[in-house]
Image (cartoon, rainbow, N blue to C red):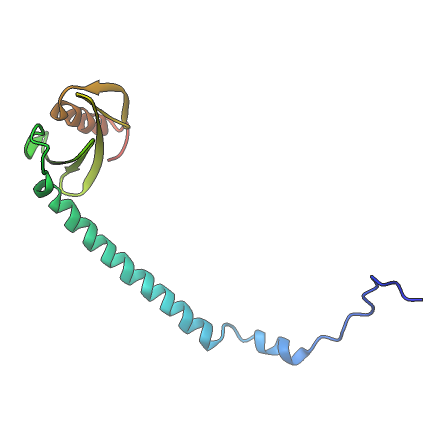
Length: 138
């Protein structure tokens, strides 16, 4: 009587199938890999181009937040602000971006969590100074 879970003797291995695997990747897998890499590179280049264009447009998109200071310089860094409701996007040197949250009449940043500010310029100056002291990287 044979046990129902008995798998019996293993089947003979087809050596011809194994011989085809020893010659490296197939032409199809190489072409598929090149296609994936090419697509990733193209999307990466497009994303970088769009991100730098968006960073340049932030200063022009300030909108109804008239209480924000205009573009200014601090310790050799150029700063531009754009307000979007309760969030203010800050662009430093055209590529470093950080957001500031506005609650009632106070401003705060997650990078300096234990301090709130009454004006954006002082907060941004402190962010730039803290980065200069290597407390974080913008």
